[in-house]
Image 1: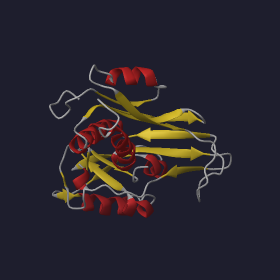
Image 2: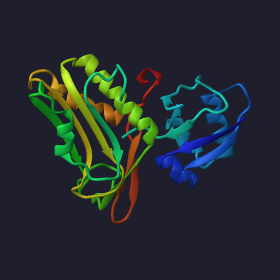
Image 3: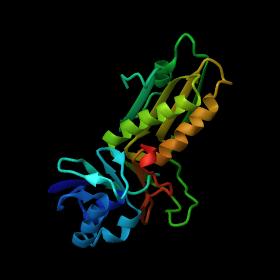
Image 4: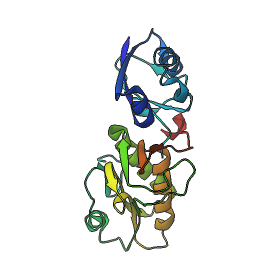
Length: 238
């Protein structure tokens, strides 16, 4: 069978394109795919051991089967209308500047008395080994179709832990972002401030960094570096 493999961030840079086509014998698994990629794309081989694989927008293990027509994506570790979504939500992957007041208005209801939010910005200096000491701008990329599903999953996880939370917003900007611009926004609403909204908002941003397929490239005066995380999602994160 022939498969179109989607590539993101570091893998896309190494391949020089965002999709590659490979042929696999049936039956095939994720491990079969990785073995073939190592053989036919030696430029990808050094980073395949740390790459994550998604099959049909779910994190996959080495033994996960692959069938004709499956959507397969490879990427580095991550830096509504359903009864499972019982309260107002707002999920977005966007290149546009977001309006914090407008998002708050989406979550506000007669029984909401508290909205706690986290807003991320592009900072101009990074004191981390291997990173440019000065950041000129960031470039964000996302596997948007899967990212929306994972944002909804985070909301469901929050409601399981903090059932008094009334509404949830998760926003991630992509594209080129200059120093001082918004990057990320997570908000949780509840009737009162002591109903878990502080912990829920913290959980939301932490979980976004773990399972939502979004990556950033830090661009400095002399070099640019893709920032990769250390958390490795498994099938249990689906």
